[in-house]
Length: 473
Image 1 (cartoon, rainbow, N blue to C red):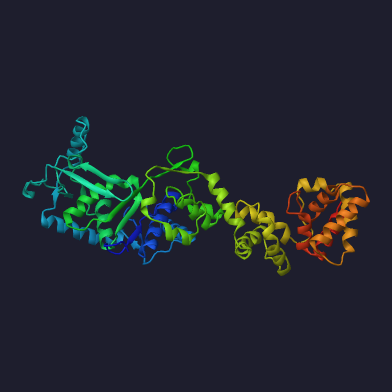
Image 2: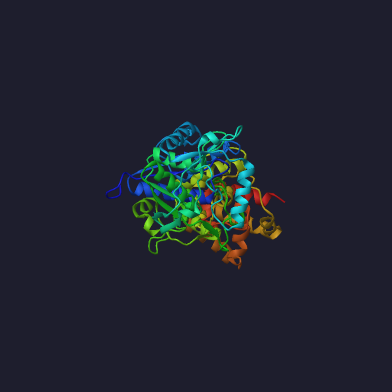
């Protein structure tokens, strides 16, 4: 809780029309961290009033994305559509108090009005003709809208926690519609009522909503409700400085999950987009909760860089525990194999992950590189490895197999000494033996150190794979 203020309550309020995109994920993260930092609540509201674009699948995608990121919410999610009766009630109260009025303008009148305003360079597209007019003058057959009786002089001022003091002349804002002619509340009214009823203390969102904040502040004023603290974050841009789009990597968070990114890496990366804590780059979740506050959010647009995210993901993979990585790669490997992994292969996999994770950029790559540890014999061999297993290569493998068969202490050092001695005895470069061995044991020309691989595979599996390579023409 902030000193002298109500309990901190933040909210994330996405529209369920598609996936949870990367910009929305950052907004959710900042709201979640601010609430956790101040010991408050983080709430979730689905702004689903647009029923034509509403998608239950999108709602589930939003839930799934937030859960993957570990951004847990504190109460049952709120449906904005479900609160439409409450929104209508507030509008009727405004009518009764004189803070709103019914407008009976026809579509043709409104079109003409807007055209004249644009020609005159006026930001006020509605001229207020029904503002003080007696409803008895209403034309027949026109369903009215309900408009806010907005202040016409002075300024609307917002003390924004990120942008500072922002203001607009009230002569730039017209009497906005609160309830449409069909009786449905507008977004502006619904947001204000929901934020008030949910006791939202801080509205943290993208700065594309800054103009909305002025209008919403006027509704708060008409209702004599306490204004929340507004905090408008700059939007994300691509690495070229242009508005973030799919071509920059602005995909749904589930795409990053499916592409093998770790949620901790994603959270760390999103946190550093527009927020800083000195020179710290690698920030744990606990540190983020301890350090995060709005005063360190920058006013300039942050740039999304896929290369930096990928690099950060590699860092988190290298520092992840092998047991954690095993749980992530196992289902991927089982899908690639088309069957479950046997117990002895699972043990090899767990032992081999520490050597593989040093070079992996994502979990999918780590899984593909680990596949040779869990494959049943005979091992599939790629084209480059097959070239290494020509007649000369198979002869080298046969020599190595004979040397290895006599080793009783199956350890990295003993294996390396044995192969080095075999190469030296034949006046061969170590690589002449090691590369065909790598191809035979991994099915590839690239792998962790070959002696590490042999130690992890174990005596029986190693000699078996070498036998397969020698006997296969």
